[in-house]
Length: 151
Image (tube, rainbow, N blue to C red; front, side, top):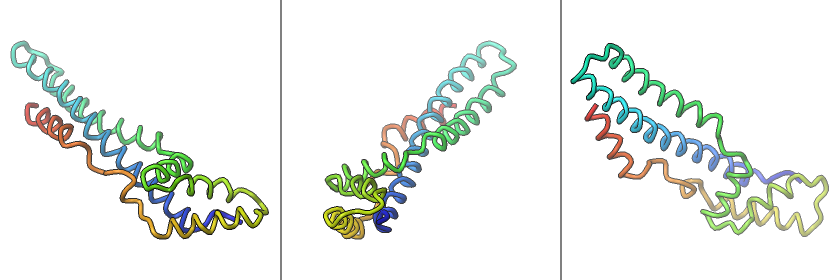
């Protein structure tokens, strides 16, 4: 018996949500750090002539955005990791991770089949919105906005 469709759908949605949340957090954090560094270089460039200061600002910001995107694509959570997060944050009590493991068994017995059916019924009543928040902390957003405004 394969992994129930509702469990697979819930884990896939959680994986997408975790990837998006990680991307947004990295974009905000890394862009804020790059903007703060670029603001420091721009402040020094006001006192002394630094010909590469404007180029550095653009490259630092673009590099932070590109690096955050690439890092988020490379470090996507695995299916197993997403299942663990679903179990922990949605109160699955190991239903989802067990269903993923039992879905690999070629011929499950009646006990395994009941567990898979219970996991399927549980997953049908859940959505992935409670897995993580997509927006980062307001303090981080504020610091990033401040660094960009200062720049």
